[in-house]
Amino acid sequence: MASPKVAEALGRAQEHPDPAAAYKDILTNIKTLSSLATIAADLTAISDAVLAAQLGVVSSRAVLSQLVTTLQALDNHDVSITVGAHVVTAIGANTSLASSLLEQTAALRELMATAHEANDDFLEAAKSLAEIPLDSSQRRVPDADKVSIWIRIVRNYLEVDDSTAAETYLNKLKNVMHTIDDPELNLHFKLSAARIQDSKRQFLAAAQSYHEISFSPTIAEEERLHTLSMAIKCAILAPAGPPRSRVLARLYKDERSAALEEYSMLEKMFLDRLLAPAEVAKFAQGLAPHQLATTADGSTVLAKAVVEHNLLGASRLYTNIGFDELGLLLGLDGVKAEDTTAKMIEQDRLKGTIDQIDRIIWFETRDASDEKGSWRAGDLVGKEMRRWDSNVQALAEDVERLTGALQDEFPEFVAAQIAAA
Image (cartoon, rainbow, N blue to C red; front, top):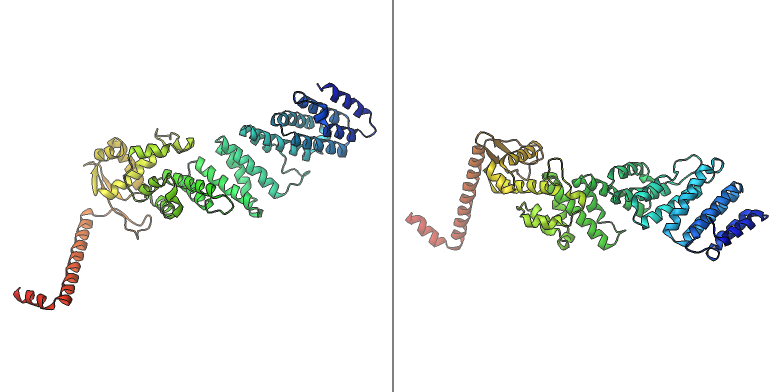
């Protein structure tokens, strides 16, 4: 129910020769006619009176646009949500006006979404924005405006970790982003895509996306470093193997990485050093909840990434190792260590063979020139013989170089020694 002053003003407006102008005047002076305690009820009463007065499409649009302006000027989030929800529902129930007031409905929903975002109610904000008509034949919306709203929806869904709903709107964005020249909108699109990849545990793709964004000149230096930090975290969480090694190499060579807290983990990952539990626990403190979620096999994403990394590190240290010994090194039992190794060999992320009879894993070192999938397990004895031959040849060449250097510097001494021999 409206306050006495507003109720009196509404009565006069109904008898005014130009009711639309009278309603707009009430809205313009609402702060003097109403109080903070009654303003939501007063604005609701004004909107009901306008919709019931049958002012016509043009006049109704003008008054409701003034209502939106009034709500923006009040800057009261609770009032915007209460009044906006009531007016939107009332317009929807008025079938004769609903299709003619799409612009005003859209403006009210955006205002409600802004208020929900200010209250950290991101799910309701996303729902408000999602109900804005963007594809209606009765309302033409430029691609830039569509993109702006869809990006807000994506970001709000990501705030509540609903990556599935966010991806639905990201797919809509993909169809129109090629028409957008706005650097800020393009940046938000790329960042949203990276966050969705991160949420869906596509860590390798997310790391590459975050790293690309970290070079963007449109964001502040602090934000660029934060994005680089996210790239490092995702790269560390990615499945071990050659593709991740290439991403780690790019991040390690980035001069900015040395200033970040994650650098020590990045360095050890890149150099294939074994990771201690204390280091892993410290790194885990900076991860998001979805990055620490439990997977189907009962382990966390981080634990799985560390086990696979340490397994690769062990392959650099050992020519062969027993199942149980490897399990002790990785913090697993022998069966789990064998299963993990077998899976990595099968996926071409580790080079080696498994002797299930003697319960031994034989590792082979991939040459730098090898391409993915170009090797196969060969005769380990033959490999050791080739390595021995290479070492003997290198030793002989070193002796030859030393002898030549002595002969150039001390020819008489060398000649005497040769004659004595």
